[in-house]
Picture (cartoon, rainbow, N blue to C red):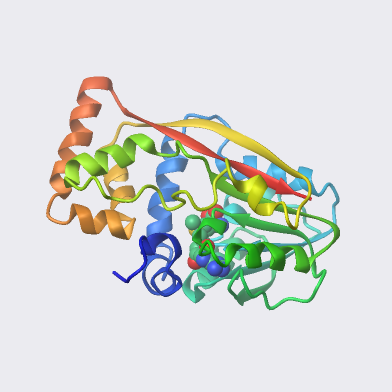
Length: 277
Ligand SMILES: C[S@@+](CC[C@H](N)C(=O)[O-])C[C@H]1O[C@@H](n2cnc3c(N)ncnc32)[C@H](O)[C@@H]1O
């Protein structure tokens, strides 16, 4: 691990070479949400609907910033407007390659893929009509986030929109508590978003570039009735895996005991979007 307080959150070197070197960690987390979320409308279609509502035109130049594995596109391919011209960008070359392959395998055409840092975008002023920054602005160090927000504004055309997904304070609280008790480490950090860019603080953080910010929550709970997907999620966070090293079976046993007693482990999901115009 490196020197920042929580390298899983905002240590660019660690994020590029370890946490997001490839899609495995993110896949484990997305799989838990996709398999055990109780909300009938899955997250990605919900998110795409918000993006389409933010910019209600058939033709748009769209930047997916911090695209990760491109799950947004592979999970919603049939609903993506065919006239959208999509550019992918991510700090990690590995993620970018996976995202492009996944989107194109699902039939979504990608115009361009660029390895890029949100705080220094290699795109012309006004190059896009819509920027998606989904579960990524919390990875930009606090000191650089204002610059990233200004960069997003710069690359948007007049009248363009930003759709930034992030978490609220209560996100995954019960899992964090389980990791803390089973690792014996009360100092273990919270989710990747921590308190850096939250639904509660997004409006203020975007205000300098986006005078209008609308926050919308995605109401859901995880109802997890299998042990391993939850353990895989916990071990996908580097600092949690380190805290749990040698104690993974304690976590397994604690999860199994809750499932035996209650039928499932219920975990608060507190996510949503900040739409800036
Ligand atoms: C939690 S994942 C989200 C991926 C995807 N947007 C999604 O919602 O599934 C965060 C992604 O942001 C990327 N990322 C982190 N910091 C970044 C930065 N400063 N600039 C661009 N991408 C960044 C990571 O490499 C990772 O792929």
